[in-house]
Image 1 (cartoon, rainbow, N blue to C red):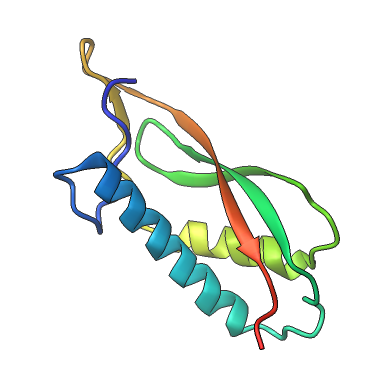
Image 2 (image 1 turned 90 degrees about the horizontal axis):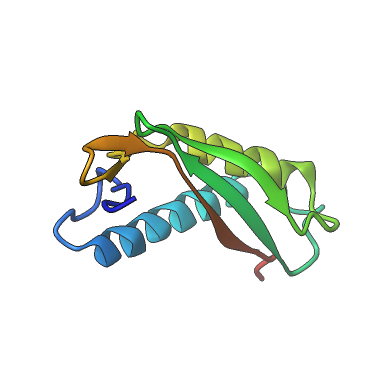
Length: 115
């Protein structure tokens, strides 16, 4: 992979700015989704590691989770709903071949109950 995937709703001139913008968008959407759900079952502070994939057509999907401690199933369904609601990425490309490639990465998501 020579050209990473780019999130369409963020600046495309700088790869790092695009990534930072994408993680901010994801964080805001997850926070809003979790705040709209009943929070009584979410009494702990934890980090959920979400394995994400951008395929060769730019579709983002959840591949799995690490550190599945005592989190409510509502957290997992919220993550999957938010990921499914996002627009397609510009896929990653192998530059010298101009071939789109699939990319996987692990994104840490802090889960906590705010006051």
